[in-house]
Length: 217
Image (cartoon, rainbow, N blue to C red; front, side):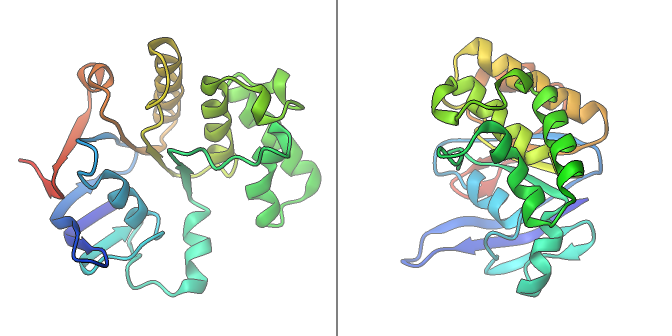
């Protein structure tokens, strides 16, 4: 499903974010990505979603080399990838429902089907009763759940989450992780970056650990 082979990423100025990183994630697997701030976790997720391209090595997602993919093919790849960013990237001048509708509108989904899917996604994360609320009226945990609803409304096969519980208290963090586990149970492949030791200690699956851009054995 996801395969990195000797992947390196170097930014202008010479900073090496990733150094010869290799791993493979199977379809339906839930993997935690651990490491200190600046270890390369965000870069790894961005490379997976073709938001950035590697300087060396190959990144394969569902059999496609995203590092050499043509720009006009990338939007089709991303239809199967849900993204949850650290900074939310919510539209604060639109309702919760409108935020979730946006990915479907970009893909020219039928209006009625889009509304049905968006409400189903909001229901999945427990926000159906807040569909008319603007994000500014939601708590931090509710905003994060809204981000998850937006990420899953397209029914992706892969979900990438960058520090999704980073600014949440333990109760909200547990709620968010429970949502991820429910998605894992229906076959979604998940890669979640975190520095939260409590989450890592309770994760029963595989954990990949980065340190200064290198994958630890």
